[in-house]
Length: 384
Ligand SMILES: Cc1ncc(COP(=O)(O)O)c(C=O)c1O
Image (cartoon, rainbow, N blue to C red; front, side, top):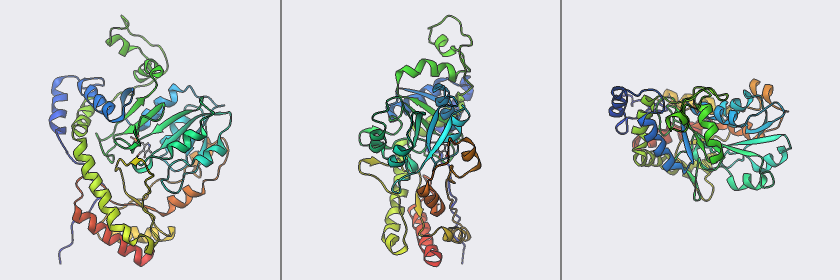
């Protein structure tokens, strides 16, 4: 009997003109940031998010760092961050000197829980980071409701998973005063490593351009607004190379194709697993009414945490790569070091221990989706 080919967790796809455009970027002579492909990619992102201004960055992490710099945070300021997220949604604010308060997530979407946020909110809170886990909108209405009397509290939207998702008529990435995107290898649209900061308040644009460009007013100089450029403020070198922007442009140009493929994978898993969910005690991703997912990843919560290792090992022995995801930040060494005080995040602890992510990439075929689902169900039947 022949062994079926293995199914990796992720496989980057050349989906459009990426190779041709990268060649053009190199031979065209402008390979640093701010070149013609940065403008093209920026315009495509602006169209997909309704963002006021798009700054392409070296990563989502650096976009979050730029937002933290723009907030001028200090040691008396607190930033509320979900415990269930990637480290840099928190780290970016800690390294600017702010203290963190870790907030639990709601069971359904694993997005920030507005009820816990209401308990944590005090006068020191300057910003709240929200994440649309898996590209599915968090409880935007609930969070806005809690912040209704606190217009001074800034929403930073970590939309690393969210490009092309929406909540009702609002695009993900247009909800926070600042929003960040990721173009890391595993994301829907990738250039290897990359990101963007979206500015949704015009008042932030001029200063953001200075901080983005090594603390100088170089962008104002290129736009003819000043006759020479010089050092003006703090900042760093945040710009994405135009070679990577060309790669990204090649992906963004075929967004409809990429999103349709990913949607088919997501819906294929959901259809194959739903009939087994009650019997096996599986929790499939929750999509709140009005949310249009970005089809970033597919996760399942197992009935028991102690079954996860065996389920994942069984799949690996059949050539299928799965992973778990975030380790609770409030309970990590860094989280404890930078927290203003300890908080309890029981849903995060529970979900994080039972979560498995299935292989998810554009070129996963319907047969592969069904093979993964069948093997997964069988492994849960054995160990769940
Ligand atoms: C929610 C979230 N924010 C930020 C990041 C960091 O993205 P990047 O690798 O582009 O810095 C990730 C990484 O996957 C993420 O999941």
